[in-house]
Image 1 (cartoon, rainbow, N blue to C red):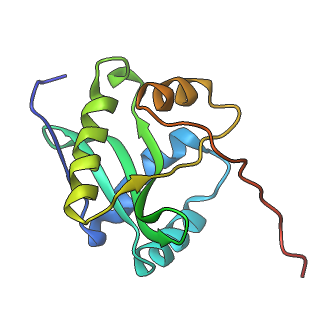
Image 2 (cartoon, rainbow, N blue to C red):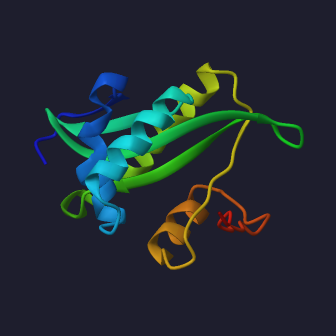
Image 3 (cartoon, one colour):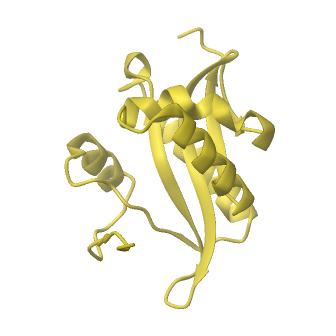
Length: 144
């Protein structure tokens, strides 16, 4: 770590730069599929905060800003990941502090997220960030 750690929104034209970090989370989705989905996501309002060590992208946190009747305007951190060699250095907390400030600047009043059942490190992180489990997330394919 060089010590020059910064966080900023990744410009939509550079969104594919997050693919190597997404692959840390899931190696099974083909890159072309990721590119297609990211293009669709950006068109639907997806943004992504990038954590940089100088010019090297070392962490990401996707951002969705939504309004739901039961919570109001809120943000959803999505697929937050930091490269292995940068973990356990307080950088996840630093990235999320930037994300919370950004969400507040967008008039968000709360945050909700999904975390995979198998992601025990993620559970620990989100618990420390003050998140509470309030629901189950269900998923079902739509039959053709």
